[in-house]
Image 1: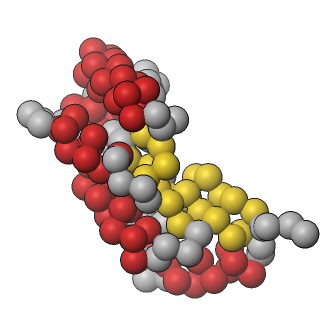
Image 2 (image 1 turned 90 degrees about the vertical axis):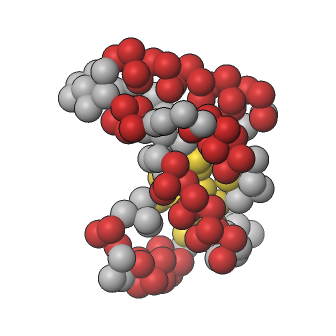
Length: 128
């Protein structure tokens, strides 16, 4: 028997879903999606993702991380805050992370520093 589908890149916290988030979830469930991993792109969204998953434990998890576009926005203590978020059982991976030199919302140097820090954190806590 199938356990259903897993969507590993759900952007449920995006403001475009604020008015119909429950309807989106309902459609996904009716289509056979039983597990969803909410992709978070900055520390604030990661905290929201964690809170959402704690309030909706049936088939929801999230990531915690800083997208390369937001690398310019990290401040002192960001990595400790991320480590605390990433240590939560609702958080299954560090991310969204990487390098994005297409539009360079953050400089390559900022992106690389944040990316390397997140890779190290992920390795230290044993999460992808």
